[in-house]
Length: 104
Image 1 (cartoon, rainbow, N blue to C red):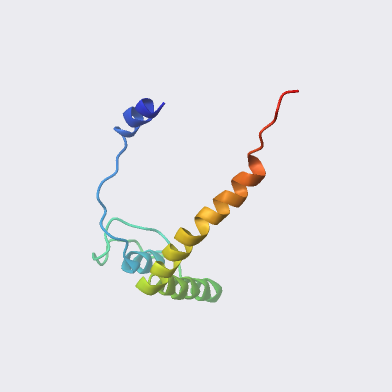
Image 2: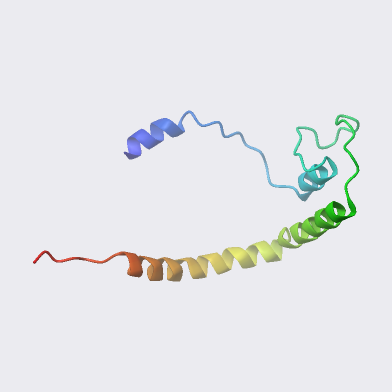
């Protein structure tokens, strides 16, 4: 099965995209919520209808949260928590799922 999976994965399109950038999300918000191929080209997109005050508030809130989680110290904390918690969660989870049954 591993050999078959490797063969399937050889056809995957996975270009090097670089590191994630908050600027891409900000640009998407400014473009009506759509990621586009052009981050730095002005005038490429057609004008969008004005956002409602509620949508503006939601977008600003989303960007605030995104900027917080994009900070290196937050990402390191999440990674460390995941490394520490994952083994415990898996152990508890598999303990409840894996049961040996003796035929009698």
